[in-house]
Image 1 (cartoon, protein in one colour):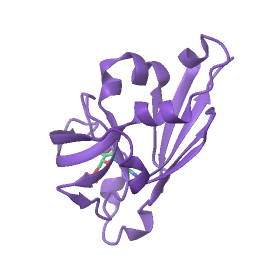
Image 2: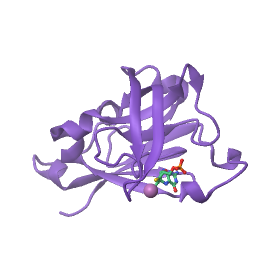
Image 3: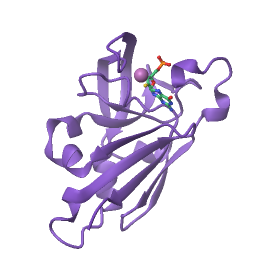
Length: 160
Ligand SMILES: Nc1nc2c(c(=O)[nH]1)N[C@H]1C(S)=C(S)[C@@H](COP(=O)(O)O)O[C@H]1N2
Ligand SMILES: [Mo]
């Protein structure tokens, strides 16, 4: 787990995030590319671990909605019901992974809070989580889906 990592975390830093799998247009996005999407600024977001413990907060950060990124990549849905069986897997450089369902992202309030972020207090994200990270801001406990060093987003239809 990330809180077991100490010292020099520069080897984990991600410079780009890829979007692959069941999409019409695979993408490789740098921080500059992310800035071309609609950017949201969040003043404060509490971080809580899976066990309920306080893990500090994210302050004054900027990011873009995962939803907007997926709309640019265009999720492949051959029939009307495909999206309901589709999941999105976010992976970090240390192979930490979290999943979302398409429905969660596009058809619940949680989806509005899922951001790929790249800036805090006007600065690039430091080596302890940068340069690209993810947060699901409307989760009850926000720690687990705070993905540091985000490197890829894979769209996958789970079942036929
Ligand atoms: N890339 C990556 N992100 C991660 C993790 C991880 O192991 N790798 N652990 C998660 C979990 S379960 C928690 S609680 C927080 C821990 O963050 P901290 O070490 O800053 O407290 O990071 C989250 N993000
Ligand atoms: Mo955690």
